[in-house]
Figure 1 (cartoon, rainbow, N blue to C red):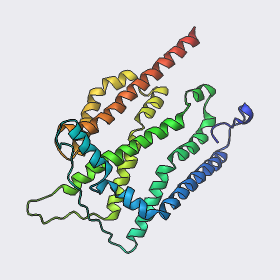
Figure 2 (cartoon, rainbow, N blue to C red):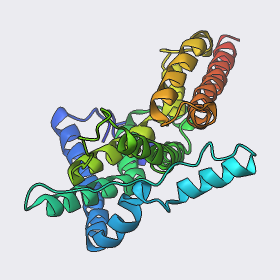
Figure 3 (tube, rainbow, N blue to C red):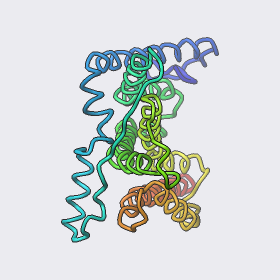
Figure 4 (cartoon, helix red, strand yellow):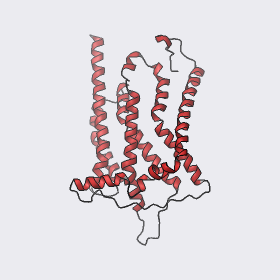
Length: 284
């Protein structure tokens, strides 16, 4: 189950390598079953999921388009954040294209929905290897890991998705209009999956900062020293992601990413201070 079996609160003999593999296999199987269960539900309601969720970011009436446009006018910015309607004609190039895409859509959706359970299974596997003192510092870890993942997934779906597809669908190479963007369904699903899962993983930065500070690989002073480089990287990413060069749209993308970096510094500082306090108690 981990490095040690702690049944009945006592540390017993170290498990063999085969025992570890057997225990890991059980956790993996349960995780796969959870993904399959949610995936089957999504497949049953695939038409609704496809019409209202999967293709949401390319619909002109998508909630993000309306919200950004309303916010732009409320803030007296005119139509700065109002993006033109997206016109995307997708296609499949194989007989099994739509069926296989339905399978992909169901499995990816199953992974996203089952993420808290998958992480819980992973945590159950490594938890017995931790000491009691280490376990006290990992309270609510499943909640926070899931919270940041879903925040990132929502950010990718509701914000980056509309910006990205609006920009890519409207980008034109050449002046004579001889090229027409007609992506395949697989290509669209791949891009949407990368945005959602990529942002979900990227938003784990505060959790990663916590763990790396715990094991001594980074420190709050290091994160503060590299802040200026992080700002440049985030600004470049925001400029690439946003479809127009106006500062307001870039700011909307920049702020959440910069906030995560600053939050990582605060978390790292708290962890570092706590470790220093404990070291002083041990030496006193």
